[in-house]
Amino acid sequence: MKKGPNPKTVADGYSFSDERKPVVGPDVDFNYDGDKNSEKPEADPHMPNPDEPKLMQSHEGEHRTDFGVTARPHIKISSYVYLWAICAALNSCNLGYDIGVNTVAGPRLQRDMGLTDLELEIFYGSLNLFAMVGSLTTYYTTERFGRLKSFVGAAVLFILGVIIQSSASSYASLMIGRVFVGLGVGYGLALDPLYIAEITPASSRGELVTWAEIALNLGITFGFTSSLVFGALDDDQSWRFMFATGCILPVIVIFLASCVMAESPRWLISKGEEGRGARILRKIYGDDYDVNPIVLDIKESLERETIAWKNTGWDAVLFPSPAFRRMLLVGVGIAVSQQVVGIEAIQYYLEKILETAGLDSRDPTTAYILIGLAIVKLIFIIIGGKLFDRKGRRPILFVSICGITAALLMLSINFFGNSSSSGIAIFALALYLAFFSLGMGPGAWLIPSEIFSLSIRARAISLATFCNRLMSTIVSSTFLSVASAITWAGFFFLLAVVALIVLAFVYYFLPETKGRSLEDMSVFFAEITGDRSLLDAEARIVREREAVIHAQATAPRFEPPRARDVPREQLPDATVSGTMA
Image (cartoon, rainbow, N blue to C red; front, side):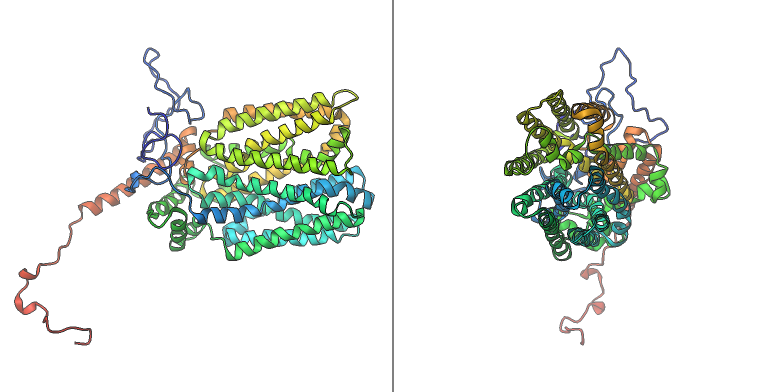
């Protein structure tokens, strides 16, 4: 077995062959069970358990020589892909701005309206509660109306909610605005990684999908910066201006979705619009690239899943086959894991944590510290995006979770006892945010966006986003209460223990998906789980395709008679020309 990228593939990663040879036959034993005295075959390092190599690997990479396409060492990312990915990622700025602005506006809002800690917790946590509803309905609009119209709908909801919040005169009206903001955020969280994954070649998907997380942190930075612009105003004015500024980004998103971005080619092809889908694929891969095999692969992936599961609705998600069950375990599990380590709650309550460490939230220095922490987070997300495509998903997530655990233990030790160091607290928070942004932050959206098959991708990502928001709601809404009950030291220690549990989950259940095309994922997970329904469906599709190719190759060819074999009187008059002759 050869380690390293196959010279015939254009995508980073490992593969046995560039030929599609599915596992067929009655016996599918995915454990090595050979002669103990014989030499064990070399393990493929990109499989979930390298000590037990698989019988056969699925088609991997980005549509290459097995389709008769001239092999190329690398697919150059077109300017269209960069432009559309940036436009989609900006939608995540809305959630980031809300997190950032609530961190700095929350204390001012609490003082102005006289809110209790419980009311402030509900205000923070309710965003995720309403985002859960928005995420569950995302699949309907994205599947029925397309990805672009869903971007517009999410932005409109966010604008409406921001207007109501910024003009609220009571806690009740403030919560009404929170409903619309939450719905818009839920739509956007499920939509951004879905769209970017569908327009990006496999070799660069890890980096470009993380742009949504980068944009989210840009939004957090913008939210923190609003305190420098409006912080000098009275409390009753400052928080209103901070919230109202959040209307700017969604207006930009509406313009980009209406005038600049292109619809997802995979959605178009799934709806029978192969011509439009192929034209967009040419913009993604370049005019000199044969996109017909990609169109064929997308259609075959839908056919494969229809043959295997008979339906592709919610039943395929609620009553999954073994391959689907593993997809859901991994995709939903990673989305939940992102929140159980406490990221969103810590970001919402950064000011309170720093106050507990001895800093004054009204001191301008605190605002600069918050901005500095946001910049640290942003830098490491960019680094993580690069490393996902170079090193793979699993090793980066391992490093990320280990770093998160160390930072949480440092925070726990710092807050143990009656005194704490503000310097150590700032350093530990920076370490926590850096390691989170390196892997768990972007990885929690990258993994779900790429492992689910096309027929249920929108539904499955909606479910993963719903569970992500549910866990964020639980953690954010109980953060202060739990910290008060078991002390800050105990709370951070609890989060460190949870992070170790997440590490075990990633180690045992997450396979390496680096370099695989979206259409390969269903067969890949079928090989991992021994799902015969998918493997047999793949074999059937391949046999049918090969039969068509054989029929075309053996069909008698019609050759028109040569001019010298045609009687002279049947030859056209050379002096006659034109259609009216």
